[in-house]
Image 1: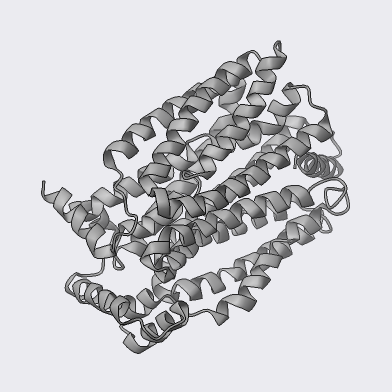
Image 2: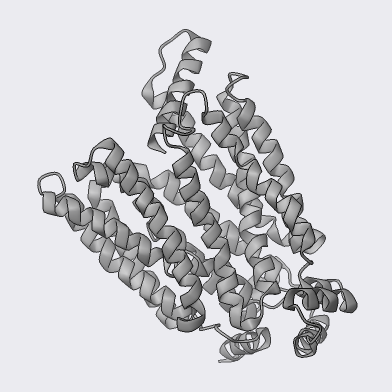
Length: 443
């Protein structure tokens, strides 16, 4: 993707020079590209904060389908940017696809969590992160110079976001709406039963329907949860703080910094350009494989165990990476150790911290509080992503390899927090999880 970045930066530089007649400074190009990168996160924050409203008004499935309108608008802007000689169109496109990504980050895990049987809730929830890692790997491959990473073809690569959107528009209508949404939010008992029977492949869904009806009766007694209620009610505030902290933990773990730094680390290890590219793709492939492994482990080991194992391992790994990078220029052993540590970091991230936060939010809240809580958590996730994307480069320029010491300290804090505060939700019903937080709030 570094070659792709260079191609777009060269295009921006030439375009600006043609407009002004003055040679474009590299700092100006970097600023324009930084805006294009960071505005994606701003869009994500806005999309994330809209999740609750969209999920309640249009449903989980309806919201996901309508969200594809934003993909079409993005493709029009980004696909026509080169022809229209406008880098501003790419910035607008990045902002719109950011809103789309923010909405998807809340709606998809919520839908997957609500349609899953209890014993598969974690595994099905992990599918969201699995698809993200696969998409990143596919985009890395397609961005190669031999495929679409060329001066003429890069706008086509930006347009390929339409492919998964078309796939979803064709296939998602064949699936039912979330039975929990139909019953608990809309009061449609028969529709919920039909949807549940379709999802389970059997009409024997009496026990699950009774459980949902019990939750429906308890939800009816409580007024609709507002944003203020989330922060004021102790039984909701405790899981909200946990959801927010886990989202911060995921983004501030340093995964984006490691992925960003990976090609540079491989180059420092004196791999040539092609070998560094291949090694970066190997990291992407490793991410996919280990996310698939976590899909299997999450229902065996549990959420808390995988989060603790992931963050504890990442803390040790990051501390060692900071040391190795400090000597990478002078020591081949340190340079090659850095490569191993980057691979290990990705493995540890993928085993739990990468996937669990997305669906854990849906597990911590009942139906009435879930949309509002998801909005807050997803907006926080994108805000943290924005902070890292804006702050990492200046910090890295000021501190060099020592920037990873900051990430190690953050990871150590989150290991302590997860150990003390995050409950295990594996195989627990919504009522069991809610009553657990009620008990904690009374203490």
